[in-house]
Image (cartoon, rainbow, N blue to C red; front, top):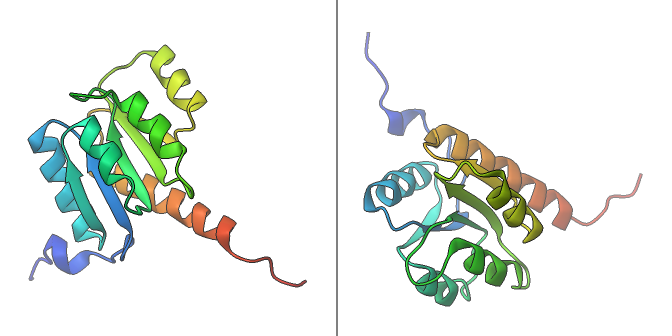
Length: 144
């Protein structure tokens, strides 16, 4: 019996979605990047908050954003991202288990808040669901 590789089982649920990944941990950045690209996403990786804000002026469908970043915190980046028109979907990832930080991120408009370690499949599922909701809300209403 022949086993199928991960590549051949992929269904490209993130096909052509433009996603920026912001994390200062190179291993986490690389693993998220590979997982999203395997699902068909077009990715851009960034390792600090200032670069993320500069890059965000390009149009991204979604941003995977670490909370603790050099040069500018994830919260400040989140605030800038949510000020864009249209704002991208933002999934904040963090090892911080504090509820206060989660509430603050929610006040700033985060779309999802996940604590590390995050199973990559959970991150992909979250992005697929949020992007589908965004697409539905941007669709013109249909006549009954």
